Length: 84
Image (cartoon, rainbow, N blue to C red; front, side, top):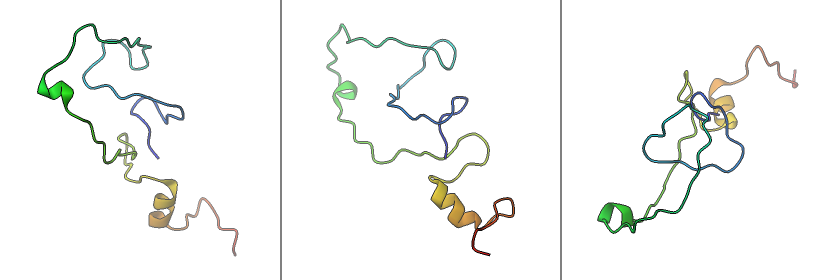
């Protein structure tokens, strides 16, 4: 129920980068080990991710899963139920 704006749903492993990357949206980038030793408090802070929002940021997306959307929207006229 979402994906990234202008990219779509990601089905493989991915990496989120902080900051900006010059170039087009789908530009291939090369990652390498840093040549300098980071010692500032900001770089040594442990990262603890609690939640990743998967709702769409493009349009009117507000649902995390398809089941959540179906529960909120109820039966739709465009998708008739099999239990008539």
